Length: 147
Image 1 (cartoon, helix red, strand yellow):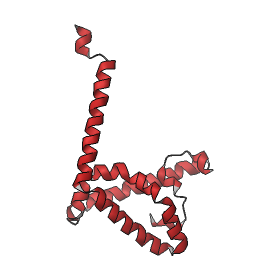
Image 2: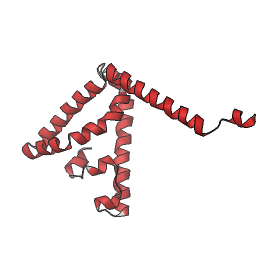
Image 3: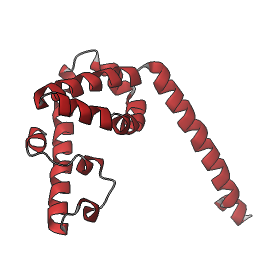
Image 4: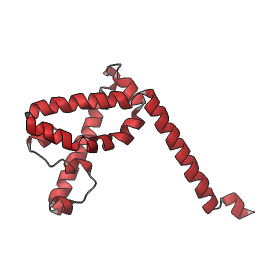
């Protein structure tokens, strides 16, 4: 991850929402960069899982309530994009990294709060129920088709 920062990689690569042509890159370079980013993410995940038995107790609730963190973090990252750019312009790169870690810790703490997790789970269950109900009306079940 430090290599991506030191090489000043365009942050839009991390979003993964746009194609290579949007970033004005060739197909081989784009595929290579995506492979590097995904490999880095996979390696980071493996490292965290390898040390999960030794994680501090304050990280355990974050993992148990990670659904809200997973669903909402992208919106927060996009909302903080401009302020963090300004911070990078006003401070050194190392101070910005420290600021990013502090902001990430605060966001993780807030989103791992059990009320957020309960609200997200309630919403997703209600939404899944509506989709299932609508789908069962549109697509007849096998039992109804057999009778």
